[in-house]
Structure formats: structure tokens, C-alpha cells
Amino acid sequence: MARQNAQKSQPNPAPKAAPERTEDKKPVATASAPTSKSAAPTQEQIARRAYEIFQARGGTHGNPEQDWHQAERELRLGRQ
Image: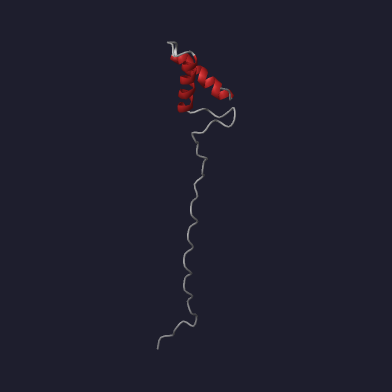
């Protein structure tokens, strides 16, 4: 008769699940007004302010690029 191994083999434990990968979550920018001086205004905010500058001038022809740059500067500095 064949000799049987006296030691019982232990079943392999279930493999451990790999930990889930978590991605670094970055804050999502909103279209609200800038909260600090370093926050860049959105294109829409600049366009609105440039239009306000145009209206304040009486709607007369001027330089739309200058209006845009002035609006951008004002919004970056937090003034209107």
C-alpha cells in the first residue's frame, strides 16, 4: 500500500484584492467672480466688463482691444 502523507495541505487563502487607485482630485473652476487677486477672470467676465466700458463711453466707436485689456486689468485687480 502506498504511504499517505500525514500532513494535510492547507488551502491557499483567497488572494488579497489590490487597493483601489484613487486619482488626485483637483478643484473645479467655476464661472463666478474671482475671489482673490491671483484668480484669473474668465473670458465671459472680461467680455461683459469690456461691453460695460463700451456702453459707459456712450456706445461710440473706440478700440475694442483697449476695452478688452482694460476690462481684464480691472477684473484681475478686483475693481469695476
